[in-house]
Length: 101
Image 1: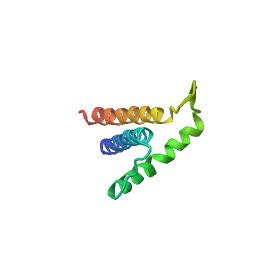
Image 2: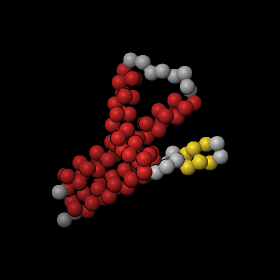
Image 3: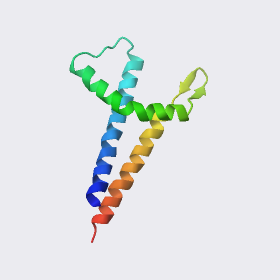
Image 4: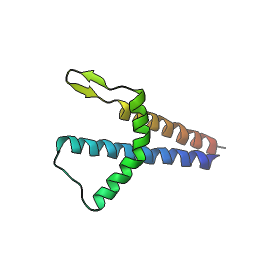
């Protein structure tokens, strides 16, 4: 049981890190519109986007963007980051508690 909880916790950690990389990529694309990745960078970025896209798209359908003046703020990534972080902490904490004698 401990090993299963650790696997789930570390999988959520990896997913959380991919989400953080996705946020950084989206900020780079927002501020540098003429940036076009090439070579190995395209493969890495495509992998990150293809892994994180399904849950992000699902939450974008469930949570509408908040309009603040002329800006629309998308909270789906923030909610997903929070859920992944809480799940990671719960799984790793439960694994640590289960390992105690």
